[in-house]
Image (cartoon, rainbow, N blue to C red; front, side):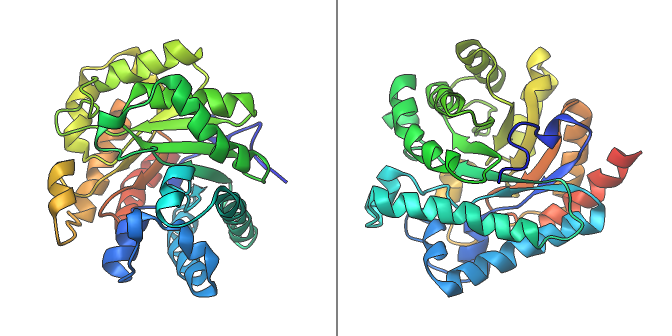
Length: 316
């Protein structure tokens, strides 16, 4: 049974942590091979589910220690039709895995003890490479594509859906329209290059404004992910009313560009303490920033540093 679908706690005064760079943690720290950068196949084996359980519990314990809520993001970023086909999974396979992933998170929530509120989110990734908008869809094409995975989520106990690492407004608009049709709260996270623009050149603020204009402000809120705070801080400092629409950040630990990260053979984990201080500065710029987590190169150490810098000040 869904718990928060009609009343997301992100809209009250709850500070919510979320997890970090799932795929980079699994590859570089746990030594796993993730073809197509996909974590969802781990749902298919007991060993894989145990690996995911350890990962999520490390992060949930940080929320417990700091008295925050938590957003449980499903390991389904690549679990859509085109990516699944690359890994030999049929739509029927993907439907089963997406639903199982939400059930898996529901069990984790039930065993999480004192951590409340805890929101379950169906995680959606871009249809193509999030760093390259050269295969960009129209909004209608994006809606048709993402409606399939969103529809699978709608049949579960999921509270919301979150689409991350999107690089075009059209794809964000399509995701929002698909989620709205099945009554799911939806969040869209855009990624930016080192200049604070989306990979297709759209300034960050304009991306949020255009998305809202084309969807009647239907997104619950927006996020920024898969970029270091240095890459988008200037855009925030120059921003205006759209800053109020940013409810979450999942930043990279590294200051490298997307192209440089793609070519890197070693993980750039940055400095967790420094990243925590960066988030504290972001919270002073963003009045509605409530969901804090990490992206590429981050792990539980970064989330703990973020919580150290932000949870106490939020409670004051």
